[in-house]
Length: 605
Ligand code: FAD
Image (cartoon, rainbow, N blue to C red; front, side):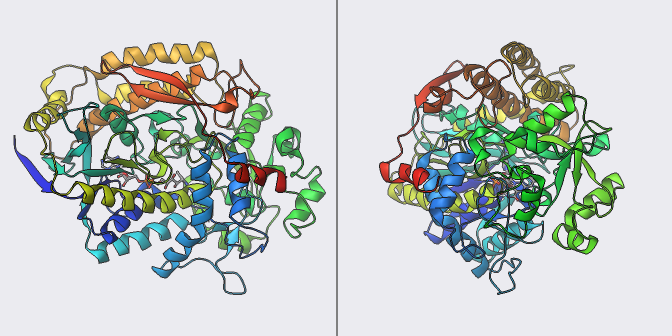
């Protein structure tokens, strides 16, 4: 087999915020490090992040600190977060933001010259460090520049299709020995031998029809980890962002940043009612304004007023919008109205939300400084991911690490806005350090990649070319996306999830019979044929875990079990793949929070 080979200490799969931060940390720890990514460097999904990076820097509110951020994160996740991850995240995020600034990131400033921080749902204080509504771009630009300056090798437009483990193949036999993939442009194979691999491949949103996610989000890392013998946690929790574009159809799902609401935008139904006041759950009642006057006063006097209900955590707002539309009070195109035009002047809107202004002008011919937007829920983020050690991000397979959206545990059942970018920086760095340390411990005792494993990975990748007249990858993708959208979406029931699982079984047969035409040189149909098994595997995990959890919590709403259940509050669901390829779901008790941390919830009640 024609194969390009490389040898490293640490291979990072993914060049988003988590991957680049991990690569920098591994390199600085002395490891020979490479980054592999599907798209061009600088084009990872992180670049789309808009609102900001959550960190308790106390630039606007001196009373903010890591304990308040920890509390907000845990409450936002409905207490299912891994407490240790939430603690490390809250403690370390401010240093990671300052470090980014030291490396050249230009954040918006307060009048006093400090890094500006904006309001987002579920955060008690204005906490998101930002660059207009283009924060992800600045974060990636800064990390990318540093990666290049440090001389870290980057393999871009290169897809990893398999993790290599001791013992030869996908299995639990032993530790990581490397990764196998192909150049997207030429279709040629490439293998990296390395004792440490960091997965930083992002999310799974492309398994749904309406999503804010980019083409890269096909769940590769989740699936590669599972196939190598690692476990996934919290897969039933998928975040539907409340505000995606609903019109025109070609842009349905594209994100409308939460900053619109943070900066004063309000949600209205077709009768002009500010309906979020009807949907304040008891859990958040104490800290949410009761009247429109109080909510409006909060924007100028946060100390003496409570937050507007539009800034409740995302799961609450998404469900409320869904209910309004279902009750027949939606906008003409099946969403609700998000209005900032009547509340802020045009200059303010254009300055604070430049991308939103252009997005609506260009894609929907709507001037958001003059008229309301139409918005509705869109699949946005997966809370579930590779089960990792909170301090090192090590997965169950020795040498495998995961950070960023592909890792699970940090956000529990629902992520707060802004907590992803900080998660990437905090845990990306930790994963890079731990991966380098693992590699250095193994130096001299390295296991060669088995030739048969490489040949097998090559055969599997080329199989779609060998089948004539099989299934078309685009048709299968369409059917999978429709299934997940209709049957494992924002509101779920047992019968619908069971129906989804039946369809997933049928799709498995079709995926095993995918065929593509043409050559290996830049062939999008072939690329999709290789992505589809990943999408299908993660969809199965989401559906099976969603069926098992008979309650509603965060990003998992069961119409047949509408309330949160105290017993389920103590349980995580773990997905594993048995040697015959079946996905199993098992219950695991939540890690117990130490007493001094538990006290935070009483102190800050
Ligand atoms: P990504 O940035 O997605 O990077 C994944 C990388 O993995 C890419 O380089 C990709 O090419 C690579 N990859 C994937 N599969 C393979 C493979 N098989 N082989 C090789 N490479 C592979 N969060 C916030 O905190 N604040 C915000 O303001 C915010 N705004 C957002 C706005 C939008 C529109 C969206 C969609 C999300 C937003 N989020 C925000 C969420 C946040 O952007 C993501 O969760 C985060 O960027 C994920 O980063 P990551 O490093 O884990 O993955």
